[in-house]
Amino acid sequence: MCGRYVLVMDEDGIAKLIQEQDIDHEWFSRLEQEGRVLETSSTERPSFTSYNIAPTHLAPIVINRSGSRQLELARWSFVPSFWSNDPSENPKFSTFNARDDKLKSSGFWRGAVEQYRCMVPATGFYEWEKAGKERLPHYIHRKDGEMMALAGLYSLRANPETGETLTTFTVVTTPTNRFMEPLHDRIPLVLGGIEDELWSVWLDPRTRFEQVERHVASREWPEMAMHRVSTDVNATGKAKYKNEPGLIEPVKRVEEQGGLL
Image (cartoon, rainbow, N blue to C red; front, top):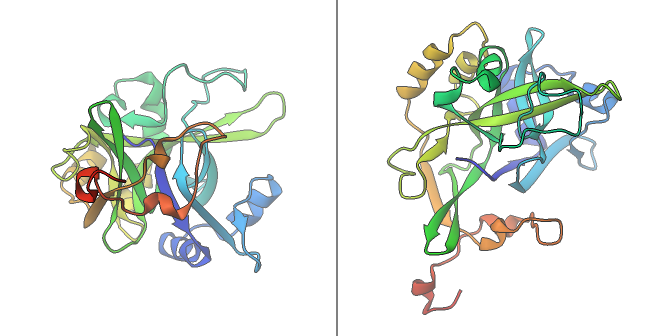
């Protein structure tokens, strides 16, 4: 599964993303007009940095819309457009992940996998190791430090009260691989790096999902690394939630420190 992830995308990172993927250059102006903006530096160039993106948080995704690729700011936890006219009502089950084996069989996901695929840029993600009653977080990332592309689905849902469109998304998961097996039996579907040609396959709605599956099955993950990190990542609620660079710093196991963390 994928329940928390990291994206450190400065001005140069966004510029690279736009250049590599031929993203519509009007995307930032459009987000400003809609009141949905990314953080900006003193030079007024957009950036996005979060070391602890959790379900319901806003994060950038890339979509194929009206014939062009666009960078969207969307809420992480998928709500289909058909779900309800009540903008406050969400599904009663978790929708921040979508299992690949349910995408075609479930009506909840079927329309999105056929027409509304997205890419979720990430610098890394967290996964937890069960150790008795403890959940020990690990940070998984590319060895070269570059961004990776996660496969996702998105939805455009109109708010009948305000007329505004809410964009939501989910991260697609697949069975684990040898690298991640010690931690979990499900992993995010990694499409490679942001420069990977598999983007075109995934984002093109004319490509049948079965073809996408074959492409993905034949691909290797990029060179990855993982390390234990602080349990501060686990904290929930406004009072305890943390979002700081130290969250991805490695920590030693208790037994390696003579019983002290």
